[in-house]
Amino acid sequence: MNEAALTLEGWYALHDFRSINWTAWKAADDEERAGCLEELHTFLQEWTQAEQNKTGSTAVYSIVGQKADFVFMHLRETLEELNALENAFNKTTFAQYTTKAYSYVSIVELSNYMASGDGDPKANPEVMARLQPILPKSKYICFYPMNKKRDLDDNWYMLSMEERRGMMRSHGMIGRGYAGKVKQIITGSVGLDDWEWGVTLFSDDALQFKKLVYEMRFDEVSARFGEFGSFYVGNLLNEQLFEDMLKL
Ligand code: VOV
Image 1: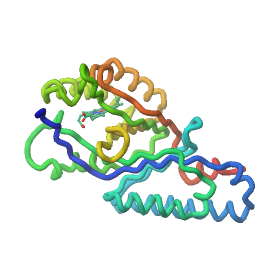
Image 2: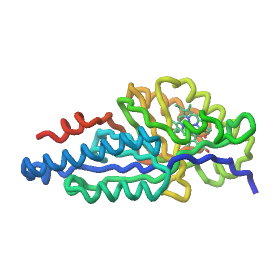
Image 3: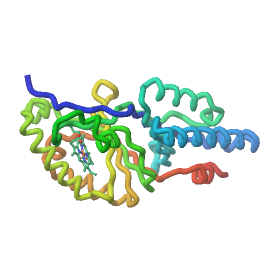
Image 4: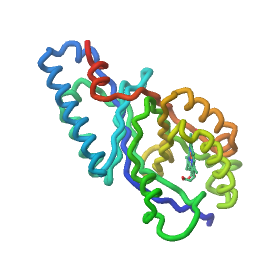
């Protein structure tokens, strides 16, 4: 049997994409809408608090295009907490003015392709900061799920550890060229959702998403083995910007 890469897992992730039912929102009265904004305010405060307590992190972005209107990306210690978060939101009055567009369940993952040194990696604060990341408040987000191909001729899972490591090194080198411009959070979802990984990118310049993803398409691991789902791209929301978006 071939050698599986060893993985380290951190916080569980839920990408919760929603659309706004504008017809219903416009038909609501001022009092109802104010109540919804109040609910939203409470949630945003709670999520900020969780981040301050280091029990998780949440990113909130609007989505450009027709696939969704906004996304809550939650990172928490357990699947139970993620479940509680989505249910709490679903019980709000504001949720009645939204529809579910898409969701993705995964877990922050690091692999040992580039591992260096021995000892317990979880004792390393740098590793822990990557496994339990505070999501950046960058201006833009890009999310897409992906697989690595399992075709007879191009089967990632039948390559030796050495071959895979070589390709991941090249992948990492390209990524390094974007240091300071794009931050990536790779979440593993084998056995958790429909694709094998979720790729979440953050940047203050949305054009860097295109540059990075395009450059990687020419790199062997993406060119030969990458299979991609739908791409979601969006703009940072804070409380004020969320209210502005909902203003009629
Ligand atoms: C900001 C850019 C950036 C950087 C620096 C970077 C680096 C690295 C390193 C060093 C490693 C390996 C060790 C680890 O940490 O796991 C990875 C791992 C991974 N990556 Fe990556 N990646 C980036 C960016 C980046 C992008 C844009 C994509 C999407 C690919 C594309 O074509 O659209 C991606 C995918 C992945 C995946 C799916 C994995 C897991 C693969 C597996 O088989 O396990 N990644 N990645």
